[in-house]
Amino acid sequence: MIIKERTKPLIMLILEALLRRLPSNHQKYQQILDELGRRQAGYLGEKSLDYYYRDLPQHKYMILHDLNLPDGDYNCQIDTLLLTPEFALAIDVKNMAGKLLFDTDNEQFIQINNGIEKGYPYPIAQGERHQKYLQKLLAANHFPPVPVEYLVVISNSYTTYAVSGKNAHKVKPRICKSDVFLNKISLFEKQYSKPLLTAKELRKLCRLLVKMNTIPTSYVLNKYGIQKYDLLPGVLCHIHSNHSLIRKNQKWYCAACDTFSKDAHIYALNDYFLLIGPTITNQQFREIAHIKSINVAKRLLHSEKLNFSGVNRYRIYFPKNFPW
Image (cartoon, rainbow, N blue to C red):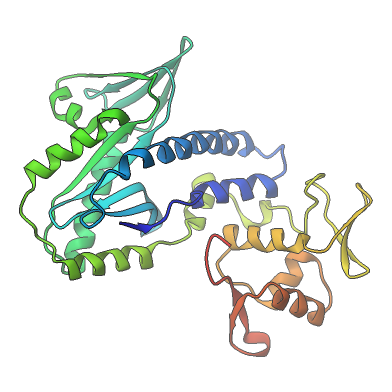
């Protein structure tokens, strides 16, 4: 049963918003653009695994896609988490071309594609972090000590991989191509046959994970050292992204395009929720949208059917669901 549907990953949405709001000559712009490209490929790889997830027994497997769980100042991002009464499995999908090398001696992950060699973070180390994180989470919330496993799944059918080093025999079982993914699941089922979680506990754990899922805004901005003042303010033009629109005749006007828009402020709000925080006040909206009138800002905020709490200057607005 799918508990958390697959949507476009929040980290991808944040990176897209960052690229909209950073000047193209910013020193981190290309680095962020490169990460977005990798994330986009990964997302396509994750979606390709849906073909195999559908064969898992729905009554037994709880499936949660794109979990972003708080880990102090960091973010524990899990592509897909499978939960059963017997075990939990964190899945990391790699949609990469060429040949992938897992060097266990040096704990390196290397891609060789078209004669170009490039290193990436070691996915086994990430899997171990996810394993420890979930084990601590289970213990902290008084759940039975369900075995937590992790798996690196290579989704590109044309990609080859090799595992080398003295610990290769330990790492090999953690890696597979997508076409043998279900075989790996069968091995885990044989290894862990004793139910430890009741149906009630399993539902409770799923609710907890969904509730803990947070927008990894601060993690991404801190990772790249981006400050609020680095971001371009204003309601931006979608054609000329370095042009701020002005409020004119109850619409948004772009002098560069000589065009009007009724709802361009929606994109500015969305960028705010992704990059700054999940709530916004009338004053904060006026600052980002360059609006002077409190009443105009209030009318625009109410027109978007945002939820709100508080009154007068203490009122905050927030989307009912996210992504918004």
